[in-house]
Length: 607
Image (tube, rainbow, N blue to C red; front, side, top):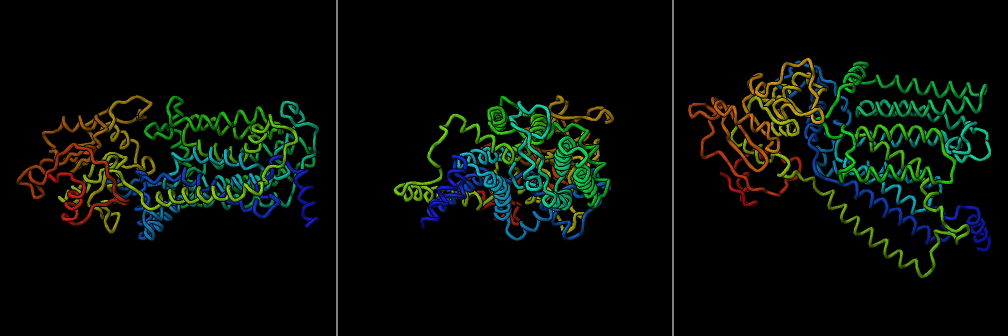
C-alpha cells in the first residue's frame, strides 16, 4: 500500500495540474471518472438525437431496396422526364445499409444506427483527449461544442457516414504522426508560434506504415457518400504540409519520408476510382461542384444574423481564442488545414461538421491551456474526490444517467413524420382514390411519393415523378430548370441557379412536358399555387389541407365521364392545422377504412 501511494504521489507531481480523467488514484475515483464519461457521452448523444424524418430518407431506403433486388440501375428510375438518362449515384453503399436496417428494425433501427455513429465520432474525440491527458472540463466543453454543431445535420442520411469516416481519418493521421504533431518544425516564426527551443523532428517509421489504412478507408467512403472529395482534399493538404515540415527539418534525410507520404497520397487518390462508375464519378463531381446549388440550403454561406448560426459562431470564436491565448506550441499543419476548412465552412454550411471534428481533435489541448491560463501555479491535484464527496457525486451521476438515458430512449423509439411538414394525408387521399399516373410533385416531397407508390419493379411503377431530390445526379439541367420555373419562378440567384442554355422561363412548361396527370403542391410555395390557378381550366383541385394541394387533370379525374373521375363527395378540403405526427415511413394504408379510423382519432373531417 505504501508503494502504491508513493507511485501515485509521484505521478501526480509530474502530471499537469488537471489530473487526466483516466489516472485517478483511488478505485472509486476511477469509477467516478468513468461515470462522468458516460454522462458526457449521453449528453452528446441526446444533443445529436433529432429524430424527425429527412425528406430524402424515403428515397434512400427505396433505392437501396431496389439495388438489393435488381442490382444497381444505370439510368434514372421512377421518373417520366428523364427516362434513359444516366444516374451517377454516389451514395450506393449508404443506401444499401439504410435498406437493410429499415427492413430489419424500421425507423427505430435507423435512429439507433444514427446514435451509434454519433457516439463513435464523439468517442474518437474523447479518446484523443485521453491520450493528451486533458481534464474533464476541457473534454466536456470540446465534445459538447462538436455535438451542438452537428445537431442540425445529424439526421438519417448518407452525410452521417462522411462525418464518421472523416473523424476516423483524422484519428488515423494523428496516430501516425504522434511525436511529430503538436510542434513548430520550421526555422522561422518560432517566437510567434511559442515554439521555444528548436527540437529535432521525430519520425516514427512504424507508425507511418499505418497510413496505408487511408486508401482502404477511401474505398469505402467513395462508395458511401460524395463528401469523400472533401476528405481527399483535406488528407492531401495534411500530407503536403507534413512533407514541407519534413523537407525543412530533415533536408536530405527527408527523401524516404517524402516518398512514403507521397505514395500514400497518390494511392489514396487512385483508389477512389474503385466504384461502379470508375472515373466517370469524378468527371460528374467536377462538373457538378462547378455549378452553384442555391436551391439546397446547406450550400448557402452561414447567415451570421440567424439564430441557427450561433453554434458555428461560438465554435469559430473558441478556435481563434484558444489558438491566440494558448501557451502551447502551435502546429503549423493543424493551423493551416483548420483555417482552410474554416474558410469552406463559412462559404458552405455543409462543411461546418468537418471543422467541428477538426476542432475536437486539434484544438482541445489549446482550449485547456486557454481555460487554465489564469489559474494558480501549484493547485491541489484535480481528479481526486474527498471521501464524503464520493457518494454525493456518485448519486448525481446516477441521476443524470437515468434522466439523460430516459430522454434518449424516448427519442430513439419513434421517427415522427409531422403532418405540418409532409403530405401524409394528401398521399393517403391519392391512394384511396387510385390517383396514379405521371406525378408532378415539389422536389422535397418527391422521394416520399416515390416510396408511397413504389411497385415491385422500379421500371414498372405506375406513378413516376417529374423531378425529385436526386437533383443533377440523374436529371438534365433543362429538367431542373423547368421544375424550379414552376416551383419558384424567376427567383433571385440566392434561391436558384438557372442554366443560360435552357429555354426562356416558362412556368407552365412543367404542366405540358410529357403531360403529367396529377400535381401535388406545397402550399408554402405560393408561385406554384398561382400557376395552377392560372391553369384551372384544364386542372381540377381535388384535395386541400393546411399544407398540401392535389390537382388532377380535368379530362382524367375531373370529368364525370372520365373512367377515373373523383366524385364531389370524395373530394376533401380543409385548412385547419393538424399538429400530429405519424411514425415513419407513414406510407398510405391500403384500405380506406383504416384511413377513416385515423381521421376519427384526430378529429379531422374526412370530406
